[in-house]
Image (cartoon, helix red, strand yellow):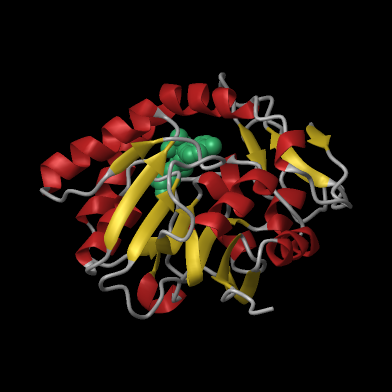
Length: 275
Ligand SMILES: C[S@@+](CC[C@H](N)C(=O)[O-])C[C@H]1O[C@@H](n2cnc3c(N)ncnc32)[C@H](O)[C@@H]1O
């Protein structure tokens, strides 16, 4: 069902088995075609909208207030519509992804919509950027779901400027506790997985090659943020509008209107401490 890891100690980068990166590349190279059309819809949209319920930015308030002129990096950009929105708002985005076919989708969108920004083929666990490069690092179901947090959070913190922001949106921890790996199941009203030690999660019944996800409890996230000089500004618990729809069958409106189905962490890199 899922592999457990002991999270009571923060892991060192050198102790992390990064073999899952190749598996997730194979997964995304195989399923990139399915995500091309929905990603293109994202590029067509003038207002950012977020997550499986397409909640508009005017309601979700995920982005920083002033985006103009910011150097931004999207970790696991996929089709890169988030970076396209940031570009339209006056930022200087870079899209990074570990999967060539996903970046090909992003490049095709750039050509079609005549918007250009750098696309970088790399893993979020080890990026090619100098320390303190970005004002904003963002991820919507990208590295924040598919990379080991004990590898990508230290890296995101390293490449942020002091005072810079890290924003990421992923499945709520609660929804993962309530979601079984049975085929075609949807999130239930029962706690199905144990909370303690949840970390690496696999879906053995998904079409192959299936990927590896990572989900941490809030307490473990907070320990990891603090160890990497990231202060919590907000934890946004998204709730769909009454008439919202989703193409993802794991999540029902009835459930998501009662419990948090997706959550957004907003963090600030602490200014350098003067000793
Ligand atoms: C759900 S998709 C992209 C999300 C994006 N918002 C979209 O829908 O187009 C997840 C992306 O994460 C990328 N990814 C997975 N593991 C990664 C890693 N270790 N480093 C960078 N990107 C990764 C995948 O290649 C995939 O493009």
